[in-house]
Image (cartoon, rainbow, N blue to C red; front, side):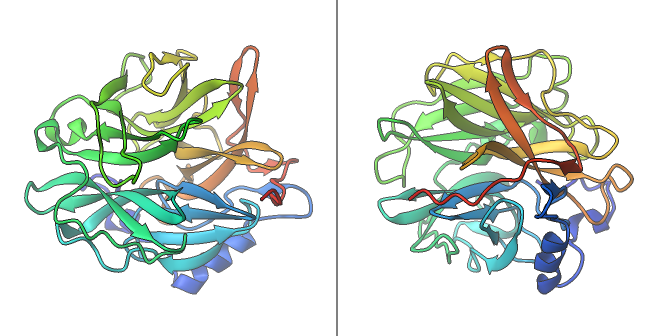
Length: 337
């Protein structure tokens, strides 16, 4: 999601050319002795991560790299810009406001669930675009969005999840804060094809803690130790109040219980407004990949850069290390099939 209109226009622009995006990302990583955050030093808000074999793909909100910027990495540290994953937008969408894509493999093809500006309602809606390769091009051939809820302010931040039994789920946020309403997180099953919803939706999470000002958004689920962990963001995404919380449940549709009464990942002296990321399982554990501002450049260039922090699931709860610039750990290349 871009910063509000009152912020500088520079906040909406990534710095440099396309080749500079890749170069900056590589320059920010120190592979020999762990890594150095940010691992991508350019503007890549709302990252969604897909692991395919030995590679990771990062998809982000639209910017100078196109409607759906795609980057690739062998280790979550060294990133190379691939290009625009969705060069042609859907027939139902206006140009602009292409936000927060997340991708999952379904029957050998790749489905990108993304947010776009619906022409018919003038609200954000969720679409699904399909590609033969994780790099794209992703094509949405539908005449209408997968999900449209204009009476609730629209819908954004789609996140697909495959359960252990193969059931596909879609999580999202109603964009209530765009219409003077409250926002909630929802979950609903997808059909086996992944191209439509079925059954009924469940409201799984709401704002009920002091730190969760303005909105709740950016859901992403990971399963660990037989339980489900929902990472979400809350606060004002354009400043230091933005942070990350975690809830736990025994099934995707809940009930969900928040692990703490404060954010597990919050601003500090090296990163402001950390959030809207995704937990990713690598060969050496789970990592949270997210965006954050430089504390001295909130709302301005270079925008929201990409950070990574290790996640630990322990008996006393969930721990996310960081934000920290330097870390002795480094995600190893995942060589599992």
